[in-house]
Image (cartoon, rainbow, N blue to C red; front, side):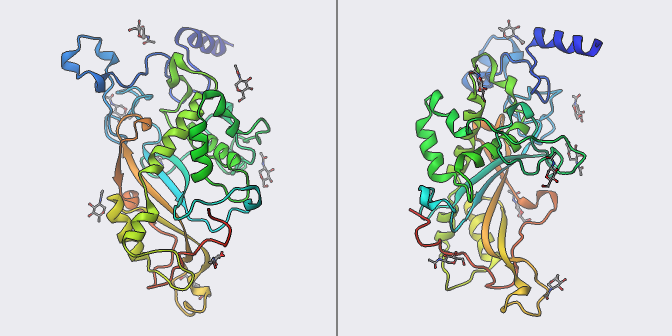
Length: 338
Ligand SMILES: *[C@@H]1O[C@H](CO)[C@@H](O)[C@H](O)[C@H]1NC(C)=O
Ligand SMILES: *[C@@H]1O[C@H](CO)[C@@H](O)[C@H](O)[C@H]1NC(C)=O
Ligand SMILES: *[C@@H]1O[C@H](CO)[C@@H](O)[C@H](O)[C@H]1NC(C)=O
Ligand SMILES: *[C@@H]1O[C@H](CO)[C@@H](O)[C@H](O)[C@H]1NC(C)=O
Ligand SMILES: *[C@@H]1O[C@H](CO)[C@@H](O)[C@H](O)[C@H]1NC(C)=O
Ligand SMILES: *[C@@H]1O[C@H](CO)[C@@H](O)[C@H](O)[C@H]1NC(C)=O
Ligand SMILES: *[C@@H]1O[C@H](CO)[C@@H](O)[C@H](O)[C@H]1NC(C)=O
Ligand SMILES: *[C@@H]1O[C@H](CO)[C@@H](O)[C@H](O)[C@H]1NC(C)=O
């Protein structure tokens, strides 16, 4: 009882939302004053000046900086992309953009590489939660399927028709409508960033402006990562007749990005194929994903990322076969891109 009263009281006094990870107030998160006015020239309260600290640095803790203005929760930020060959919904006009990898998401990993998911169940817009508990095990909190209007309907009321059109071109789902996938990405991942925490929107919050803010940010990161172009510049283009080597993909993308990304493959394992018979290389053989890792200056919305190696925590940097010329970078299915 006492706890409830205190929580209620602090909510009233400081505007703390139940969706808050860090109990931020819902006021004064401009996060821009320092940029607009160098502090030495501005005679204002120092509390208002938010330095865009680098995530995962020693300053990126809520006891030092405003969690709304520096990513203090999921400071290892991953901008991820797919190379799909079909969508499954071509007949409904859901097709892949020609000569372009598609946007998968923008994820807040912990600085040590582990991560959480579905951090704010008040913002659950995923019709098919996966996993369906917060921890992915039966002991986690259940994540109920969302049954309301698609998250794709949240953009038009806020006047973001251009963003919606961009997303329908480049943020493409396989096997479900694009909006279902966006709802999944938002609820599973965006709710775990400190800087997308609801109180950070401050007094200017309008229904779903947090969702639009996340979509804009995910798109900004994506738009700076021309995977197709980087591979193409190294002479690596989709083909169903030839194979490529993981090392060639790694050097082409590292040259473009400035650090080594994670490269994911699907399809059969190399040593179950004719070419890999007898080998101990059991990596997958069809190129399908790339994950770019960053530390970010200030809140992730500023879109100022510092590329870091996918190996930063010592984990695996690829699920693909390592054997020479083992990988298919497939052409899309006929009629799946436009
Ligand atoms: C927000 O800023 C105003 C103006 O400087 C100040 O009066 C108010 O106390 C601040 N609120 C919080 C919660 O920091
Ligand atoms: C802030 O918190 C971090 C993590 O809990 C701790 O390592 C650090 O010493 C603290 N810094 C200050 C100035 O209290
Ligand atoms: C990674 O960091 C998170 C957040 O600080 C922490 O909760 C978790 O225990 C850490 N995991 C490992 C394996 O150290
Ligand atoms: C989650 O999915 C599993 C496998 O489909 C199912 O057995 C379980 O009941 C589901 N849990 C919840 C909380 O919905
Ligand atoms: C905000 O959106 C939710 C759906 O996500 C809806 O249930 C609610 O009525 C909306 N609130 C307002 C004030 O429009
Ligand atoms: C494939 O490689 C794995 C790991 O090296 C090995 O355990 C497995 O027996 C191999 N399978 C075949 C069919 O060769
Ligand atoms: C990534 O790793 C390579 C090889 O260890 C190293 O030379 C390079 O400086 C690293 N790049 C970044 C951005 O940390
Ligand atoms: C190329 O191969 C992929 C994967 O096997 C297949 O899905 C696709 O339809 C093929 N594309 C063409 C144009 O043959």
